[in-house]
Length: 299
Ligand SMILES: *Cc1c(COP(=O)(O)O)cnc(C)c1O
Image (tube, rainbow, N blue to C red; front, side, top):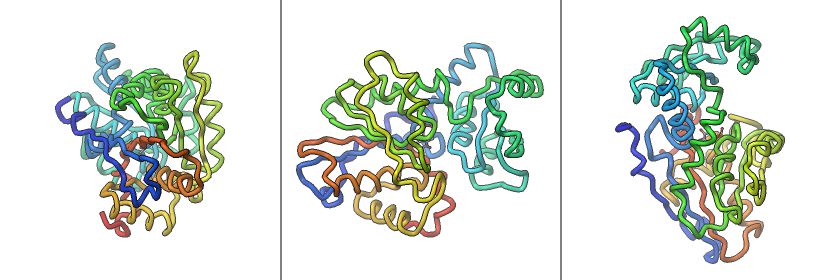
C-alpha cells in the first residue's frame, strides 16, 4: 500500500547516557514511523487480515475497540488504504467523540457505540452472527487484531530484526504481537513482554497455546510498571516520556511504549541485563493515543 511506508522503519540506538552502562547496547526498532495512524504493530496484524478479506471478496471490515483504541484508528486507516469500507463497534456512548473517534470518522469509519454490557459479547458467536447480518456480512476482525491472521502478520516484524540481539522487548496488550515475535525469532533470543495493566501476567496463559513447537522457551512477561492500570498515567510517567524524548529524540506513547521503556530503565539500573547484552526494543507506535497528555508533553 502506498500510504504505508515500511521503508521508513529504522533501528535507532539509545544514548549511552540514558542506558547508563556502556557495556550494554539498547536500540529501538521504530515501527512508529510506518504511518502516523496505521502505525507500528497494528499494521502488521491488519495487513494479513485485510488481504484475506479481499481474497474472500469482502468490501467492508468490521472490528471492535474503545474510544481511545489504536486498533480502531489503524483499522480505519488501513481499510481506507485498501479502498475498503470500515465499521467500528465502540465500547462507549455516542457523546464520546475523542480525538481517536474523530480520526476514525475522518478516515471513513462508521461508528456504532454500544454499552459496556453489550460489548462483553464481542466474541460471542450469536452476537457476531447478528452483527454480520445487520451490516451485510462484513469481514470481522476481533478486538486488537487478535486472530490467526494477526499472529501470522506479526511474525513479519521479525524480518526487520537483524541477527545479534540477545533480547527483544515489546509491549503486550492482547499478546498477538508477542506470539508472532516468539514464533518467528530464533529460540535463543530472549523475548521480554511488558504488560501495561495490573496483574497482566495472566496473559501468559493466553499466549502459550499459540506458540509453535520448540518456541515455548526464553520468554517472560513483566507487569510491574502499570502506573495504576491500563490507560492510566501520572506525572512521573509523563516526566519520563519528556526526558526520554529530550535525550533520545524518540516520542513514546503513554499506554504501552512509555511503560515498557520505564521498566527497561529500572531493569538496567537493577543489573538485570548482563554485560554484552544487546537489546532491541520494539516501538509499536500508538502515538495517536497521546491526546490525553499532549499538553504536558514537550513533543
Ligand atoms: C496495540 C498495541 C500494543 C499491543 O499489541 P498486542 O498485539 O495486542 O499485544 C503494543 N503497543 C502499542 C503502541 C499498541 O498500540
